Length: 401
Image (cartoon, rainbow, N blue to C red; front, top):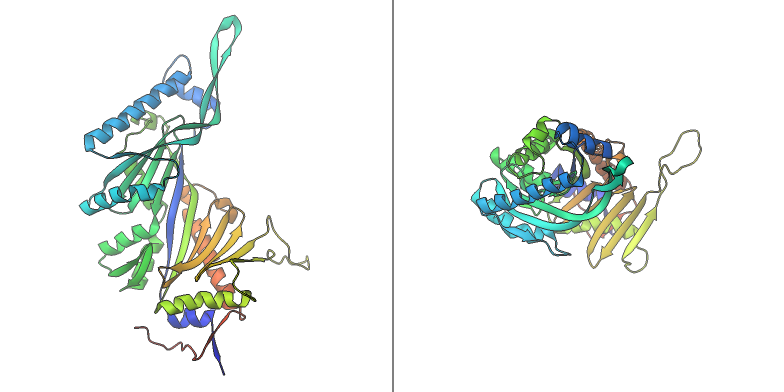
């Protein structure tokens, strides 16, 4: 008789490391009191003390900022790279980040320059009584210069801060939670080997998980504040003292769980067990499973709340990726470096999970993301139809090498 192994057998009997951690974190930086036209007028008149609010003021600030970036790069011999259309920026900047990492010191590895569409203020000229000229300010999408400051940080590793050169100077910030955790583990003397973006082995898994649990808003805010005190910026110390400074909100957050198997064949076997019951004839590129929302007592049926969730199982050759979509966000599940199961809840809008956007709410968002990852595995465990045929049973008492 042919024995079978379920998803649960593979997870329980052959997982040797299980780590939950923030992965990529992408943030917006915005100046809260420079978001509407009246605030622009107040900034120029009450804060800067100018008699007439004018687009010329914005141009002057932008020119000063561009010149300061040029001087900053020249003084510290920082490479300046102009991105071409279609460039994968992290690949272009990879060699510069690697060079900075080899120094073992925090530093700006390179400055990228790009022309991008940004939502910025535009001034409209009006004429009042007696021909007196005045301006109103409204937001519009304009193609403007953006500076990408790619940095290597002793705590976070590679990251970047992007600053738009036009009013109100929106900012983007990118860091990686796994890279932060690697550096904290190394500082604590915890031995590990790395996956391409994660951990393959660890001498003290409990201590590693405690480190991953510790990463929170204050650490990321500290990264931001540290570099904003170093980089050239369009806003000045005078502006900061006047209450004009950036706050951070969450643009995209990836909450991951990585389960490393004791052998690559068991990692591959997990995905075979996951999809075999859904592929009846042949091996199509994708299978979609449409399902309803949670049961609501008293309604007597399952209903969809807000939108219809959808799952897609994609298979290309021997690679499998499972994507579950909900509103703007998704959960993806795939094979990592041939030996680990990676589950990532990719939250493109915190409101999808009922969270507010400001960085201070990161811990709540991460907790909900981890719960999503756990529920996905729980659902797969109880899917008894997902089996992998084997000539011999997999024993839960098998000792990993």
